[in-house]
Image (cartoon, rainbow, N blue to C red; front, top):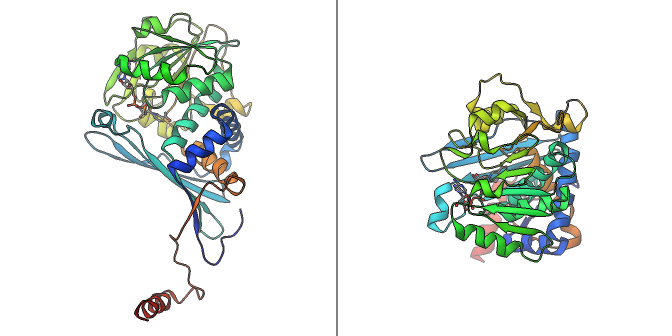
Length: 352
Ligand code: NAD
């Protein structure tokens, strides 16, 4: 990373510019490239600073900070999760994030991350399924058809070769929206009336619902052998999607155990229930799917390294794309010790 200039203007990627960047690159190509970035960073897992995210809970939701560093670059994301927002016409999840230069502590980029979170979550899900799902998987059930859903479907198409996505949501309007948005993108989209119907013939099941409770989106009898479950919506204490009995039958793969034990489906299990860290599977240090009949579960909660990878991906494209504005957010006087003098000079200039 290059050192910031004396007049430290910080590039800012707005929602508008993020949309332009995604449309310029193409959603599926960006999913494939993000999945590769995240996978490469999972291979470097031991060198990252890691901590469970810092969460501030309320009755209706959570606000979280997600920091990490690889020793050269530091990143953090601010993200919320408010399932009741949608009924007020607000997003369930919004986010923004920052990259900084470890050598100086100066910010390198500030970015919207609501879209980027949907992209990185989907890319991570698909990357995990590439390692864990049964070979030759073509059909995915998609339960919960809200803001994240189309991103998930397209990431699985691009990274795993999914050809059919079977949609279900308790709100038929969400399913209709999702089917409409996915039309003409080379996926066979089937709208279903129940989770059971959505799961017919599906080798991958993605659950991506939002409800602040111990929900039971899938019961034990719904999950046959050999299925890969990509559980995205259970990501907070007291907010899960799967019946406990499914967990007891599954090989469970997680991002960062100290965080997932608090937030993931496995909060329902004993604290020492065995789980496998996904990075170890990628690095060849742990077994992935053991056989064709095993149920594999990616207990996704979202980890800071995925956001770091996504922010670095966007940062690496700034110069070529020009899709940013400069923010005057770091006071940087010519004489570093003359911060007050900078204020006085500004006052004098104003008075003149
Ligand atoms: P959203 O509110 O836009 O959509 C959620 C959908 O779930 C809604 O359409 C709702 O009708 C549906 N739903 C609720 N209960 C259901 C049920 N019992 N059966 C079927 N459908 C049901 O939310 P979103 O932005 O799409 O996020 C979905 C979930 O994913 C949230 O819980 C969010 O916190 C989580 N999330 C996780 C990660 C991660 O990294 N693991 C990242 C982003 C979001």
